[in-house]
Length: 99
Image 1: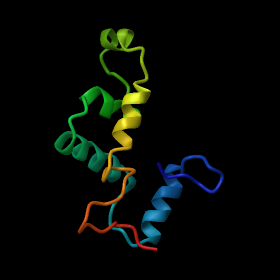
Image 2: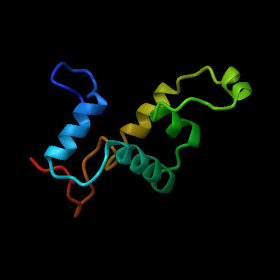
Image 3: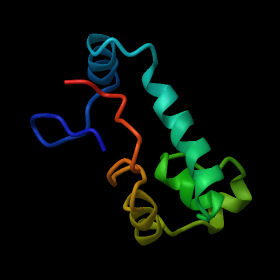
């Protein structure tokens, strides 16, 4: 979601530095929390798909033993929703990131 110059994801430290340099009074984990809230309140995607998108592991050992899918296609649809995480902001909304 946040690619680096090398095409890989930004490290926790790089993302923390970027947020601080932009003058945003937030922490990177807040993005994850906001995503979780957004997905729960604004989409109909199952909890399992949202948790997989956040790279959370199943805590229950029995359930984890049967959860063999990575839910990739369903996670892709979640991340590609219009106006959502990877889409454009809805009309009238501004992106919190400044250049």
